[in-house]
Amino acid sequence: MDHSTHGQDPKGQGEGGMEMKPKATGPEIAAVALLTVLALVVAVTVPAMRLNLGLSARDVGGTIMPPGMIMTRDTPGEAMRDMAAIDPRRSGYLAPAGAKGAQPIQPRLEGGVKVFDFEVSQIGWNILTGERVDAYAVNRQVPGPTVRVTVGNRVRFNVKNSLPESTSIHWHGMILPNPMDGVAEVTQAPIKPGGSFTYEFTTRQTGTYFYHSHKDSDRQQGVGLYGALIIDPKTPPANPGYDQEYTVQLQEWLKREGLTYPAMIMEGALPNFFTINGKAYPNTDTIRVRVGQRVLLRFIGSNNNFIHPMHVHGGPFEVVARDGETIQPSARFLADTVNVGPGQRYDVVWTAREPGRWLIHCHIPHHIKNNNVEVQGGGGLTMVIEVTG
Image 1 (cartoon, helix red, strand yellow):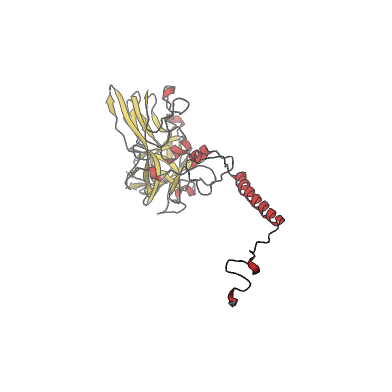
Image 2: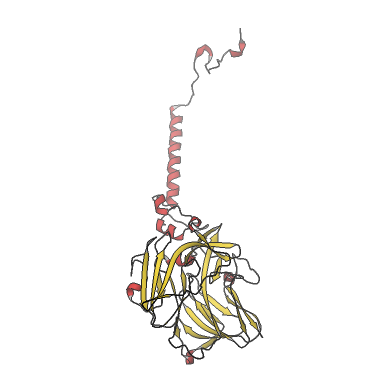
């Protein structure tokens, strides 16, 4: 007799061939079922208290939000798309490392009208050596090209939108017909992806102005869609009062874990990089003059968020214009710092009094670092005036 199977057959049967069954009681099964239902209810209810589970993938568009961004259950999908990372896969053009923004653009003449062609697109742009952001650019540069015309000129801007979203261009501070003001949903229909719009007007002012997106501008302008517009008088003065000029366009950027986000004054969206004309120090330009020469600095608040106290070392400058309006000589004043808010412009004339390397920089210390790191004595909103004897 084989005793190896005595009392239990190989198929799980007990003595006498009786099948063994679990001994769970009805109340136990009911308790397990109740706990399972409660777990499912908690798994759905707790996230629903903090997240909007009514949003679909189409609502949020596969967005990636900034690390640390506070998202509440009432945050709409449109807000998420507005604050989300720029999709780097859409940056079809990667600008060379040494590419510069704010380059002068030459118009063509058509029947006495100065015509400028703008293409708005998404590109990869280097703000520092080894530090690339994904940007919205005009004609593949950040800032967009510098437009320089004369008061009384008839100008036409043909704008083609190659962005993945609608846009428009606003001509900041300009006197022009209302349909040309460039405010999406107010003075014009947004320029849809692949679409175009033509702006045309006659310049009636002189001074320092700029253009920028006016469709989701907290996003589009914040990632590069802006540029300078300088309007000269018909008869330039014989003695302009300066030897050279330089335009300073400010911006704030947020880059985390390889992704570029529109910088905003919100938890999780605060900027960690800052640029002058699309570059952060030490990649910013150097202005070179001789002792006794004067430099006209045109500060433009093309940034979205902060008031930047722009300070120049080496002695005071004279404030000669504000928001494109020339200040009468009797009302001009000396200063060494001007608070440049978003949208504002200040023209100042600085005299080179002593040889050396003199800084122009924002006086908020965080804004003169690159991701909180100081490089070669500064960072961000810093540039040098080099004066020789």
